[in-house]
Structure formats: structure tokens, C-alpha cells
Image (tube, rainbow, N blue to C red):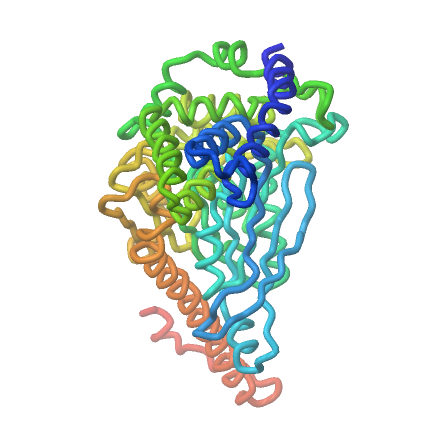
Length: 461
């Protein structure tokens, strides 16, 4: 019912929002009679702020059309590689007609970025993608808004998330022979589960896993987000935040955790900061500071764009990750696409290098929560593990902005290159061993058997 009330209110507000947009343009136009009004700048700023507060925010575009690779501009083409009911595997294909640049692009590592399904769209990682494209072939999980998925496509569970990740990794392994995985925030848990299941089965694994700001062990340094999930019962979440999609969307009738409720929760964490930010936007418009006003628009175009999550996935995540801590307790079973349960055993991972990244001031995933992955992955040698804590960085700073570009990305890049080089060295060593064995076999006379040990020597052996 609440979802329908919200949609009715939004529909009623739409004409006023459109009017505010038109009025803001009218009063800001120096060639219109309204633009000559003595309060024109103030009125334009007020209407613009009203429009921004009332408008509906759709999914933004990644908008990455080119990057520089070793100082050479390279075109970027976005395409959907795999299309699943609740997710698209999106590829950013780099194109060049320079032979040397093309050879460099082909030799670079393949990276799967697993974006969070926790309220915002995958475009929140635009800065992550843009910088990784300079040195990597990049794919990303682009999660769909659950209200846009018809009921006949079935439900989406946490197990499905884990199975999607396994399928995407398998696809890249089959295509390229290897890949690297980077997970940001919430997906660190399902990604670790996916790689664990693949290791237990003996499937080809990614060369490296980079986990950034995720709740591997939410018991450590719990934040306000963790405390809410821990202190409310499963039934409280089901009864208070789960609603059915209204009739005006393709997913009508689907039970979801609505995006507008999630957005309200985001704002409630720092209400003063957001209020001041909007007031600063108003003042920037008054002063004619177009650059600052545009920076505000870009940030909130992304921040205010939220998606609905399928109720099954959301409630299972709350229970598994934040209430029962199944991953760290070793009690998590994931059902494969055929419905067969499989135990999640991170200790079975042996051939994957692991890097964790945390922000010193992260107020979403507290200190030590991501680093806990090292304690679970006991099969990975210490020499292949790395942890980075970014001084002064909050949650978003470890994958976006100046600290990501200057401090985090160079180390993530070096870690991936090290994993790539190590795999190449192991492959070369294996090949040389096989060649030497073949050579020794070839030197023996046809049909001749190795000499037997003497009785006295055999007794000493």
C-alpha cells in the first residue's frame, strides 16, 4: 500500500515539478521579460532547487566514450555480453586503429567488476570502471531494477546472485582462459562464496580477488547500517520494508524493498550534510557559480537514482550476512541452478591471490570487516595476500574520487599485474617440466625399460 501511495504522490507532484523546471529556465534567461526581474536570480535558484528535490531520478548512463591508454586516446563501446533476468553482464570494449595500441589492449588482463546490489545502480562505479579501462579489459555486473522484471521471470534469491557470479566468471574463463575479480561493498560476500564453490568443485578460478569495503564479517566494528540489520528481527524487515510493486510497472505484484525507502535511509544517515549540500547548491546558483552547481547535479543525479531489490534477495542477505553470519561460521549452503545445496568453504581456495581494501573512515563497512576474508581463506599462502587501509577515506573514497585514483587504483593495478605475471610464470614452468619429461622419454631406446635397482640398493631404499 505504501508503494502505491508514494507513486500517487509522485504523479500528483509531477506537474508542479515540470512547472518549476520551466520557471527556473524562464527567470535565468536574460532575454525573457522575467529575466529582468530584480529577484530573477533568486527565483530561478529557488525553482531549480524545488525541481531537483521533486524530480524522478532515472538510471544514469555510464557515459564512458573514450579513455587514454599509455597516452593514446582509445574509443570505448558499451555492449551487453550476457543478458540475465535480473542482471546484464556489460562489457566496455576498447577500439583502436593503431596497431601498437591494439596489441597492448589485447595483452592486458581481463577484470570482472561485481557491482553492489544494495540500492544504487552499477553506474555508481563509473569512476572505478573508467580508470580500470586504462590498463584492463573491463566487464561489470549491471543489476536490473526489480520493479522492471515481470513476475513470470521468477524470484531472485541470494543463491541466484552467487550463481550469476559463477556463470559470469566461467564465461570469461572460457573466453580468455583467465580473469580477475573486483568486488565493491555488498558483493564481497557472494563473490567469496562463488569462488569458494568453484574451488570446491575444481573449476578454473580467477587469478586474483580484490575485495573493497565489504561486510565479510559484519561483527567487526559494526556501523549504523550493521546495527540496524542486527537489532531488528527478520519479521520486522518483512513487515515494515517489503511492499508490492504497483500496477504501472512491468514487475507489478512483485515483492520488493523499494528504492525510495532505501534512499530515505541513505539520507537519514547524514541529514545535515545533505541539507547543507542543497543549501550550498542554492547559493551557488545565486552567485552564478555554474561549475559548483553542475558538480552538485552530477553527484545527486547518481546518488538519488535508486532501484528496487527483490524481497527474497534482500531478506536472505540480511539473515545470512548480518544476523546469522553464515559465511564466517561455516554454516552457509548455496543451492546451485539445479537446486542442489553446496557448502561454502573459503578454505578450499588455494590458487587465487587475495587483496582487501578498507577506508579508515568507512561508516558503512567498518574496520576489519573486509580484512576478515584473509582469516577465512586459510588455503591461500600469506605471500599471496595483501591488505590496504586508506587513510582518511570513507566508503565511497576507496572506489571513487581522488583517493581511489591516487592511492587505491595504483596498488590494485600492481596487484592484478602481479597475479597475471605469477600465473604466466607457473604456466611456463609447467610447460618446461613437460618438455624435459618428454625429452627424457625420447632418449630411451624403443622398448628399453629403465634399469632395475640392485637387491642391495633396493634394500636400502
